[in-house]
Image (cartoon, rainbow, N blue to C red; front, top):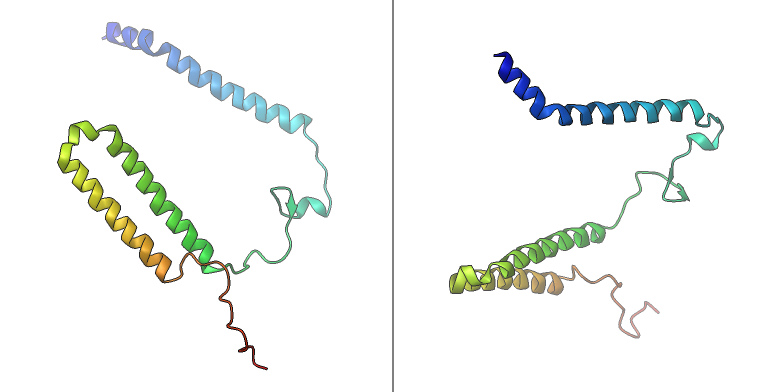
Length: 136
């Protein structure tokens, strides 16, 4: 049994050393930064600061649903690109069955894009009023 323990230690000593070295390095970096880091206090220290811009207004600000809609459309069509890239890699192996499967996939996504366009999901500009109907 001691032979198998010795073999295990000989096989995994580098991994164990790496784990201890990383943990030690992390501890040293945290310790040195807490000793040498600045400890200033003031009004501006408690303010949220993100991306170089001082926050203004409430964090509960309402956004237009169009932002979420564009994000969902981006995810959908980004995933389409991933699937089509994978399909393009194996196109010779999947043959005509894979081609028609991809064609149906593209057709369904194209139908969704046409639907989004017709319902105005991609229109960001406000609708213009016809001339002469501004209430006067």
